[in-house]
Image 1 (cartoon, rainbow, N blue to C red):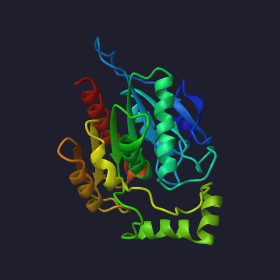
Image 2 (image 1 turned 45 degrees about the vertical axis):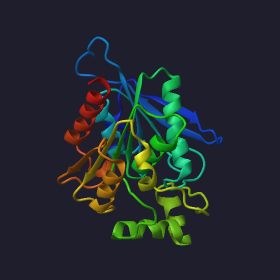
Image 3 (image 1 turned 180 degrees about the vertical axis):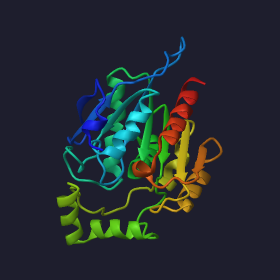
Length: 265
């Protein structure tokens, strides 16, 4: 399936400048609600954040965005160092927090009523950190397939990711094959999602993880859910793998229903 196959009428391009002068390029998909909102209900705008090495132009991500637009407008930006955005990737650190913060601010500047951030994998961890530490907090946050701590090498896919990040050959390959541009390695690691997730409350939080995630075992989900506290909603999804590539229409629709009920319940 190509990007053209997934094109949505009314989709528009958008460019957002982050506070450190990086330009992020992305798309806005109009809502396609199955029925009009009830009187007095708030319309939803989703700020959808992709995973590491992914992009808003790729088919798995566009499928998720297409399913989600049944519940509200979807805004998505290529993280820095990815796709057509400028800068270099910080691999889920403070630069990505700034990117999501800029996305939320841009949505509100464009008149968004209720903003729900939905992050996938790297985007999931960045969404947690932004909801706890950002300047422009969302009205609700959904984190899917997120890591809890840094420098994870427990699984073969993550050992492969670290080879991509930490070796000259890996960095060259990433640049050539997936157009990934990396920033300099961290000198001091920023607080990990696990260290800040308890600061998200009272903002509603949904944590979603698959029991077949090959990147981050359920240990990451369990520790995040425990640290988030009793106000967070936490789902283990049987048969679900990882992030965009593993997401299904029923799962995304379930997330959309949770967001709608949380904002307008």
